[in-house]
Length: 438
Image (cartoon, rainbow, N blue to C red):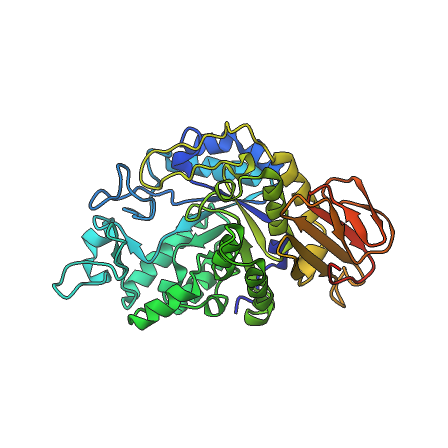
């Protein structure tokens, strides 16, 4: 397993940007916005693929960023290599890190590799290049039975590792684990402490792939090489609960299973939205409820992902295949709320505990964070209450007295186990041990 995983990643926040649809669509535009992004409470900038898209079989007018033509150059429409390096330098000067998307399962059909080394690809029965996943008709799959491909891909990673601090690896389960292990070891010689984020997939997708004779890694296998895996094993339970297609209990049960399934140092990527999932504000139209769900992501153990525009409650999900700039002019802005959550999350307790989560009446999410024996947080406890129904009065297992809502800094009173939250998320610190809502 990835024994070198830095546990402090559990305190950190990643900001995801699709450069083509971000403001002016260039690296320079991202660089000009770094001050605002950092103030949100961001540690890591993550860019969707920065390389040029192929033309053959492309989807839409511009093509998917995941149908890459050349792994080793930047997309001219986003900027030159010099522009990209300048962005990396600017990120580092601010004390942040930057990571890029790596798409190693497939390329565009007209990619440099498909042209120069067709033998490195999966071939259909008729001998033509193809892919194993039916609806991905704009790409062709690589075949990792060729050692020369491994060398090319790892050398490419080492090239980019001169500038970036980590890699988000697209559909990582479809690439051999042995490759990822070797890649991690070699990249470490160029970028010590490089961050490895796997786009792990839903368990159902893994089972379906295996049933079709396609090798597919589980999250537990991926953690041998990766620091962070996507939270797809619970995402749909969360989405169904938000849409009231299923109970919150189903989602909570899935969350509570995670600590017993994955390695002790495994880190989940916690998100409400990303480029493959609906905008949170399109699922949760009530901004007060949206704040509760957002705070929840910051409290349950893992690394938080913010998709650019989430801070403005953007509802439109930009297409990956055409020019579709994200408008931040929504009339909503929860930036200060995210700043407060980030400041709160720097407390070591959030990285040193395994939260106990529960639900009360299918209307209130509840989390208890208790410091683990032998850590700096031993003896400390935080309790989070996240109303999803505007309910003001909540019954809590706390002694009568005044407490501070660590999110807002405002005093909040508990009398005879009744707390008035004003319908807003509340986090209070205590040295007591409480585990439930009454």
